[in-house]
Length: 456
Image (cartoon, rainbow, N blue to C red):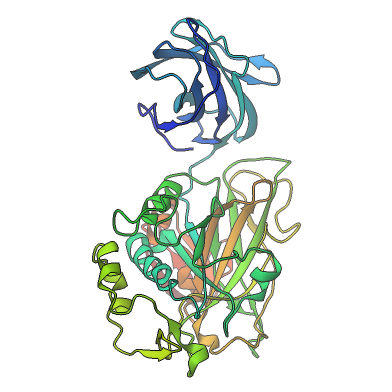
């Protein structure tokens, strides 16, 4: 998906049992999906294995659609791959299709060093999305945590850092297990890991450490940042907007007012939308609201975290109590807590139609109940909308917005609004309008700014 022109080789060593001597043999393992704007170019990342003992300097490939082959394309590698039995990534250049859509294709490496590729495994399937425009992707991190978990504070520190570093492009969700605010929706959906702390990023990386990420290493401050950057660099095929409003005066339910705009046309879509209701600043008294903290006054741990200032509040906790020999932070304030969730596995069935048109904005009538024994303060609510690829389970894109009088102000982050280059009008409760109407209007200007306008 990423535009990695000229970065053709990424090494990842594997053990290969059979090598083809004195012949050029390049095994194709897999290919990633790719996204490109109309009339544009991108690359498809193809993982291959050198099965010969000859250094590889160049390849030729074709694309196959419905058994029809394209003409061969020649690619020179920036440097030879001379270690046989090595897996690496070829970023092969491809062009957009003439119309928007998602087309299943095959890539076949036909030649290696100008000679016929001797490998029988020379093809891989991928999908090319041709879009009217590339949407910025928001990254969702679901942090699985518990107040009883003494190592879980590092996940909280990572969420705080990532939120500050990436701003509106990052959405953090704390999913509690085994404590006073356990989320049964995640438990019932079998999404809760067996051990804590763990995290999921965009449902692409699952069961990873919430601080070290896929690296599993603590050789720098908050390595999971690199995983977030990797996902964020991938464009999305759809934009998601959200302007939640109370559905009734009793505040017993919320209308998320979600809007999804796909940047391609299709008649066989496999998408669905799900929701998570968050409450911020949840707290209480007594042991059940104390956060176990194994990092308190641990100078060795401080060194392993390279002096990360986001960990300081756990190393230097101003208040500390001891229960059965374990340090706890009393009356701990829990942030971004997932109170309830709907369609949390792969979205709500039939929430996205099978057929839609490029740049058509789809709206949804939905109700999120706020009748929940976990709730403390309805003034601290936010709603997260998650757009799922039903086939893969990945989160395509997402949006989050606070609930309240100014909820419509969260229609879009400034950098996203700038990308659209248009002025959009909304009602006071966040419904998108065709133009201004009498009364209070919320206007998102082309420069990304949002303001209130009263039309008489």
